[in-house]
Length: 454
Image (tube, rainbow, N blue to C red; front, side):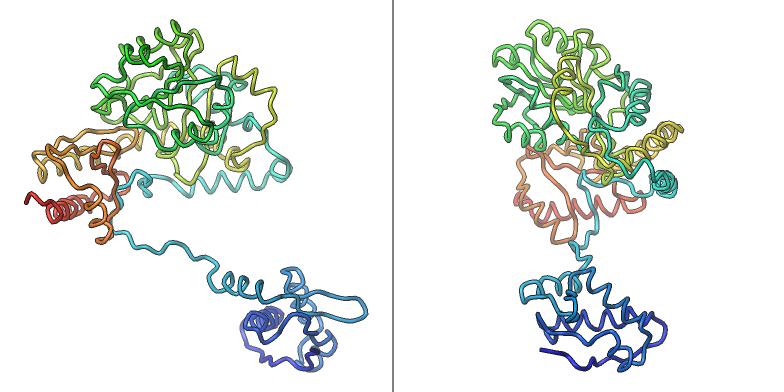
């Protein structure tokens, strides 16, 4: 059908072309203008609507660019939105930024962090500097990670965690999992061992590769060497910041035992040391990789609790054998080049080290305060600190209905989790100090309501 007139009324304060564009777009989405309907010509619109030719041209150009209309030479402009696409476009226009609108009163999950602890304005400054580097950001990134970041990370990791690495042996990825996928391609007939507490994201990768994962008993000091030998483990995954039933950092004695085992049995150790530099309660201990003279340790670090969880950058330190295999493969970059270059400058200027020092003081206070509150309101419950995770493990002296507790908390707009051992896990990272006592009191009150013993 040929459309002869457009019902359009100008309004003050907004560009005319934008008003015309939105009017025509909305009529198409409402179904008044249908596919193959012919719009009035530019000259006809100019005369009828008493607006400039430029305004009509700009409105039509916008509709063309977004795929609402097509231009057929010698014929004119036609609507190009069929019913299926009309409904889809309508949803996108009406709900362009719709997200999960669940209201959260207190978030005790480990995915959160203290939003006031990060200097966002400083980070924006570095991002702006990189965005101005047009020549650099209009090219593909280095598959192994930007050299400037690998160089800065090498110095930082050595200074903060005792990691030995050259930029050539470092691999940058968008997340721990993306690096683990690459690492798994290097493993040959692995029998993977990890503590019973597990790590779901790592287990998912191993499962995707079809690799067997054997859960190891949890002892106060960590995994048993005898069990590793008995179960023929040849790849051990460990979370260096939380080992054993007490969730403590890896101790020097156990580190030496594991390195001796790896050497004797030609095994590999995947050392997950995410946020390992964030020690505010225990004495800092260097990572295992720095003591690995035989190159049996593959080290992975990240910044999920140091900077922003949304900043998806992790790094893997490869041994020489893995590097030689990696260099023969054809991987592409997975982490944002812009964020990599910004982080390289941020680290090189010393901001990350200063930021970690500030975080230690902040989290030390929050940790001790929440532990004090839990001991006060739950005196019979054992509380363990998982330091790198910024969370407390609550081990009840009796069985609790974890599922019922979590569901009851969710109804009160409180989010929390249970671990594999059915312990309640509460992170203090995202709870403000002034809200902490009320938050603890509330979750204790909810637990008492669902506890059938009371």
